[in-house]
Length: 121
Image (cartoon, rainbow, N blue to C red; front, side, top):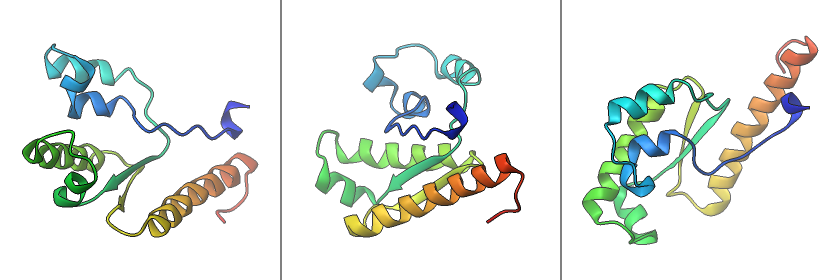
């Protein structure tokens, strides 16, 4: 059952590494990275990315410098993940949704084909 289910989360463990203050984590980042090795990795990782100016215009919760820092940190995190995709979130909402849907559906089609022993679709 679990292998045929799609679970979508808007945050995952990597968020702690990018924004530890948001989780009130005061320990060393090396420890958080070490513990992160025990956390099962997501099968698919989609980062909605935009220039810091666009992000800041949509959400002013953080100072611009912190927005820019977090954006760079998220890009560094996904750079090391083989299953990560970056979607340009400065596009229209419809375009962002279409691209994210395409990524998810392609992943699920490949996963189903592997599970059924079929050639890739």
